Length: 344
Image 1 (cartoon, helix red, strand yellow):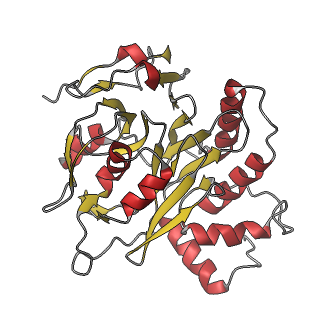
Image 2 (image 1 turned 60 degrees about the horizontal axis):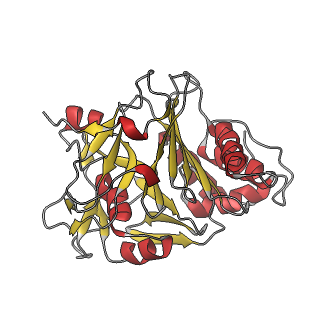
């Protein structure tokens, strides 16, 4: 039985109930190494989403995905991963506009959407701000903002709306970072947007919400407590491990070393296949905000691919492009491998 000596019993009970429904995902940011702002993120689920990687040019006409939702035209081009192949085939979502879960735009702003069961989205009866569904949340951030500070201001102008997927509304939260090392985490708790903004917000996993993890980590060695480093696949344990190993990293010798080291840290949160009922780590992304590079590692392939945003043409009028990152023939720099999306 886990010990939570610093947390009230009621809070622990809520945490354990939430964790019983939780699906894993993790994000860790290294923003103080003096070389590059780099992030590792995992996507863990009970099944594959048949993820695809898209390039979105500037000038894309977008809407919030619900009646009366926000309308915008993308200011910045971006690259990222989407669950839309599965979601469109299974639940009727749009292949191009829905399902962006991870990515980076041409300004180096990156965003990562993870699962949070505790989420309660705003009530449209009492919140009349224009809506964007959680399936278009990452697109809204990357399309419209160049920095974390801009995105924080932008999030105050909209509400994120629920949308059913297979009869269920998924709770979600988002972490973002930019080349300055600035960071923010957005969560909807009891219908209200809670923003954790600042360079210290470097780790995010899943349930419960962020304040729980801030208190829970104090129970462990290196953070003021006496508990040994935990080892389960639960969100609270992954949070502690990521913070622990992040804090032990030594200064990198160059940008590549920084990326390798953050990759080694995010691996400590990987969920092996058949490890538990919540599902394995299907993929890992690595983001280099400084050099505008985005890496993708599909767990069933023996290779890593990457995209150099500096070599892409995001000009308005260009088509949305895609690649299949699950293709085992894909390896190394795939920046020039994108082809126009075929929606039929």
